[in-house]
Structure formats: structure tokens, C-alpha cells
Length: 136
Image (cartoon, rainbow, N blue to C red; front, top):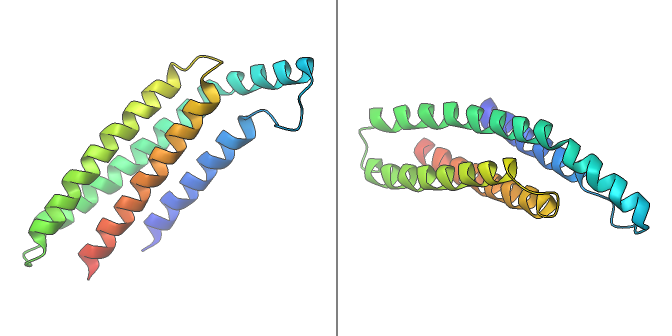
């Protein structure tokens, strides 16, 4: 299945984008750190836009999976529905993290980026698990 790999690529891209925007830990001089922090925050709109694109693409995949589950007549349908409900809850939580990222202050920017990246990674792993169990 090509699309989960595509979403994994997007997730890896987001992580790379988020990490590249973080100030380097090795640079501890005051002027350099301030410059890196402002550069990081300047990329905020780009990072948030990329996160919104990831979530939009994920929503499409989730709707496709939900349609596949609704067509399923096997005994595993109840378990698949449970997994879909869990996936929707994680999607809502990840969307909340993205909203928080959009309104993050310069001081909380790095921790909010990591929080969103971790939530998205968890969401993607849950999706992959649900899709794999449906294919069995």
C-alpha cells in the first residue's frame, strides 16, 4: 500500500522541518541563540502550514479507511470500529496540538513543536496498525 508510506514520508518531512527550525544546542552564546530563536519562530507559519497539510492529507486517508470499514462484513468489523473511534480521538488530540503550535509563544515554540510531532507520529502509527488489522 503506497499511501501509508507517503504519509510516513510526510511525517518524516515534518519532523525534519521541525528539527531544522530548532536552535542548535551547541550554540550557546547569547547573540547566536537569540538569532536562532527568532529564525525558528519566523518559520512558525511555514511549519504550521505544513502541519495543516499533513492533517488534511491524514483526514483523507482516515475517511478512506472508515469507508473500507463500513463495507467490511467480517467478524472483525466491531474491532475495526473501535480502532476507528480511537483513531478519531487521537486525530482530535493531534489537531489540538496543531492549534496550540499555531499560538505558541517564542518561549514555548520548541516544546510545542515536539509535542505536535510526537502526537502526529503516534496518530500515524495508530492508523498504520488499524489499516494493517483490516487487511488481515
